[in-house]
Image 1 (cartoon, rainbow, N blue to C red):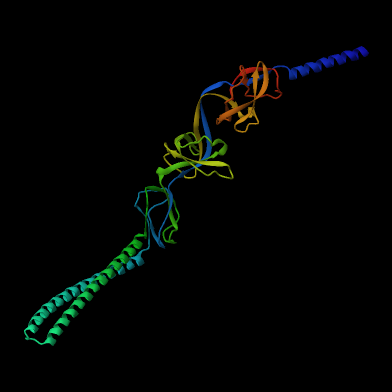
Image 2: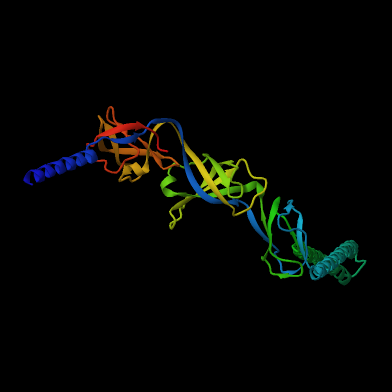
Length: 384
């Protein structure tokens, strides 16, 4: 029994040692990264289709809507009448202002006629006075008559001055009446709503018969030539964004089509809650029909790597966006080293910037049980 027990213990020890050796010392098959060429670096963003020029159109005056000439989805030209308000009251004001202009013009004509009359009387009085003054020197007329003649000249001159002043007053009244008429005509024109630019009606907010207030939106109009995509990009990926970079846009309603564009604007203020940066993508190739607010997926090409060794983020320990530690295979054993990293690709891989030791290979799929100095057997592969 003692021999059997000793033999059993020995066999058990051998088995334990063999199991330990198999679990800890047998070579582990690992996958190493290969150098890839012409690798595009893209940044993903999620956003919506918008238009740079979207305007709410309304009247500058309030009244009842009588006619509407456009509806949702209609294309309109600049200057086209879109709606009209009830204008009978304003037309009456215009007619009244026109009458006031006519009256002011008649008053001016009367003042000008009075000025001509006063000037003629002054000329006559001056001629009479000249004769009286010549005769009084020869004692033909009395001194009193000569003085009265001189006074008549002064009175006639004063009448002329008054007539000239009446002309200025009448002219000012005429200008005031014309300005009032122009004002009333402008108000009458404001009873028509015209399109300020070529566009498409996004929405009609009121119907005929509605009494609207000044400034109340009647139509929402957009300029289809200004359609672009507003995308939100994670701040951690937004550092490489620049104006003019190319982008691919895929709409939710057209998932099998890709529309091309370029970055037209980058917001200078990020979303403080979601930690995202706003990016506007201009449209080089636009869909035939646009729906504002439709969700869009955006991929922006920020760089293209001629050659790169790409490491999956999950294979990097303590990665902070710049540095971290990764496993390498060197001389048949695994080692963990510190490294610096660069661009991140859309499939969650990171460009390795640090030089590896001679003969070392970067491990892209660390396995459970991998430890410092563990025997490894390298298999070629990629990060997919």
